[in-house]
Image (cartoon, rainbow, N blue to C red; front, side, top):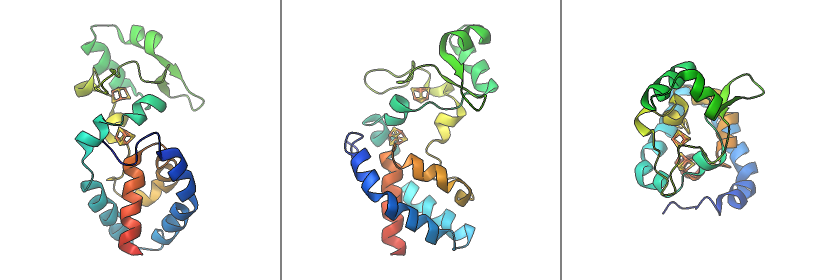
Length: 164
Ligand code: SF4
Ligand code: SF4
């Protein structure tokens, strides 16, 4: 079971928000390569397979952006036309990107498995982006993700332990 659980995360992450902001502000002063290394190391210490299966908070509470290539791939898997997939499952958000109409995600099963796992949107594969190069460029997003994703919370906690 992931620790903190998705139920405990909002309170813990809200309390730690100021600390997270200060940490990211300090990290901004370090070289990109050093910051990427800190994140990559902390990211690799997460047991993603087991932790995500016991969590699925991202799939339950936020939607990935679904790009055209995702739409074509998922539609092919479901033997639907891309336009049918759009009508049934997607909606345009305020930035003009397709996102899932409903949360939890329509492809999430009660045991937290994803029914389209091999063909899931690219944004699902990359979430929560803690191993991304030049991560400093998405610090605002990382801060937001720490409120949703226990793994991001733990990555920041580990980095804080490293840099003091
Ligand atoms: S990526 Fe984060 S929020 Fe999503 S299932 Fe894994 S630990 Fe939970
Ligand atoms: S497509 Fe799969 S991985 Fe992506 S949000 Fe839905 S259930 Fe989660």
